[in-house]
Length: 296
Length: 279
Image 1 (cartoon, each protein chain N blue to C red):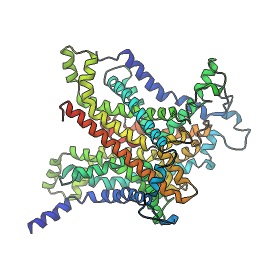
Image 2: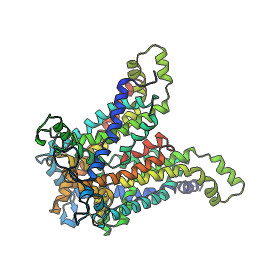
Image 3: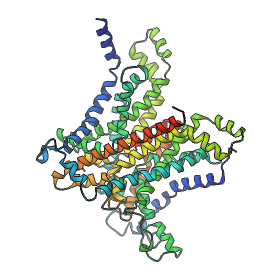
Image 4: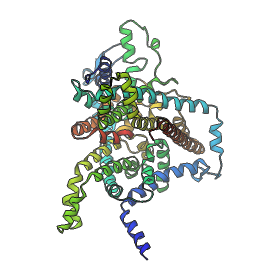
């Protein structure tokens, strides 16, 4: 009797979670479930009813461009994350110091955080296209004589344009995560190290970096996950084909032949899976590293 | 020791220049009529051709009904405000529970709420389109509002949980002891205490919603324009940036700038960094 009463009470005190749970279950979990079911061959609206079949996964896993596209997806996700992390570490430590114009700097560096990725795309097109401003500047300086002489930075597989947009948006983000963490941590340990005669180099690698590690891992993780599944930036600034897996999913879903849509679903589920597994692997590696250092 | 090294100075300079610098050529591009290779400045400006041609150019075009920028702006604001109000109604009770109650599976629930951060937007967007297709709601403003709840709620719950965690419960108990009703307590004690946090969360939610592209694009099925989907359709070809696209880019920067101007002094860096990652 008493047991049941606490049970009821338990539910009542958690009732506030219900609206949020319902919304997330219907529109987030529900959406993902539909993707899974369609990718496994249940899409009666397109006249497909082969549930369960791995046909659509196999089709794209064995397709021509698969490995190339998977490689590109990883490449566009990992390279800017690593470069961005290094730059952001450096900048966040600089921001924690006092300097003239600091208030201004702390305002301006947040601008990219508050605008859509598409703004970055516009800017990169304006500046770095073959007929763009930098090409014109080089022409005016007599370095190149036609737009074709300017190195091709956009709409190619190397993805310079893609990575520039990512860095433009994400260096400020990671800098902010690290900088706010530095503010919370304070400077006592660094100062003790300094008093004990450590060099700047030693302080960074033995005191600051280890203390920033959790937020560095956290922010790179978010950035990686975002880049891995990102669409509009590689769609506009990447090569037509092959491009990232997400862009391929777009292409298949957009196809006039609706029976290709389950394959698009298979691709997005695959991207979700690989992204989650990468994050899991990253976290496990990080825990190992911390355990080795005797922190956890 | 606490002053900047030369290298740090250079790095900060490049960061800031890389952020503000492009605004100048964007403005110039939005005012150009002809800006051919290899001119560093437009050879013909917008205002020189403004009277001569019948069709609206550059900024005239942006403000002209033909460009659909007006309705897109309206939709963007309407969606953002509705999403924010709905999300507040849904997130406040959840945050209160998470901040004050201990229960089995709490960390699992929090993980569940963080999942939209990791799942690619494309997966959620395609799935959501199919959910709404089932109900025949695709291309509907209400459907877009519901769709935007998914990226907004997880963030809002996180921010509001922090706010509720810092709330002094003694104050609420005192009010109860003095005989205030539950509504009175909420209205006169709890609400004023959490209001600054609620405002911050609301501003973030507006920002997140205005910056969403893919979800709006799929669920809206081309029938509902927002600023983000308009800009996408202008620049999706990746060719040279025409004056209208440049102008539209500037228009789309405005809400973000306003947001920063409002929150710069009041919002702690920590709150900010928690919320911005998805936009």
